[in-house]
Length: 100
Image 1: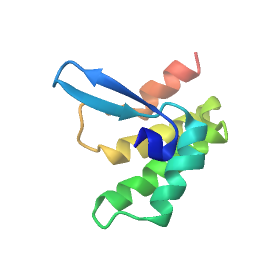
Image 2 (image 1 turned 90 degrees about the horizontal axis):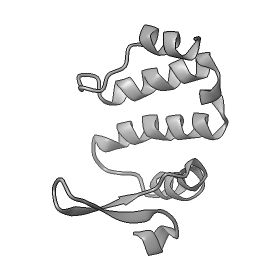
Image 3 (image 1 turned 120 degrees about the vertical axis):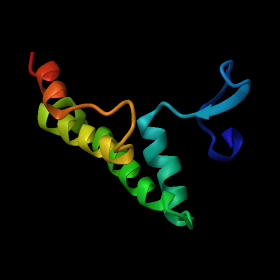
Image 4 (image 1 turned 90 degrees about the vertical axis):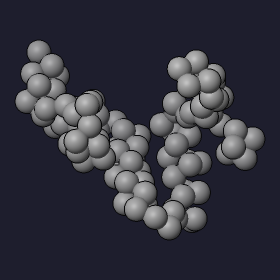
């Protein structure tokens, strides 16, 4: 995958003894990964999650995360991906951090 997309890195995950492929660059995600999955959409329920992920990436690429309003919206989108998860962030908590 690293060679195919020409970006990202592969790192060992010692917790489950696997290798992880990760891309930390928003620009590379927007310019290389998102177009691939727009051209070749997933044929599962993951496609809906991809659309939310793509929106988050695009908003961050446009630097919307640098404003309290934009950051709050991105947090809401992220929470919608994992509505019942352990890492759910409350908008009021995030706003108090951003506005301090």
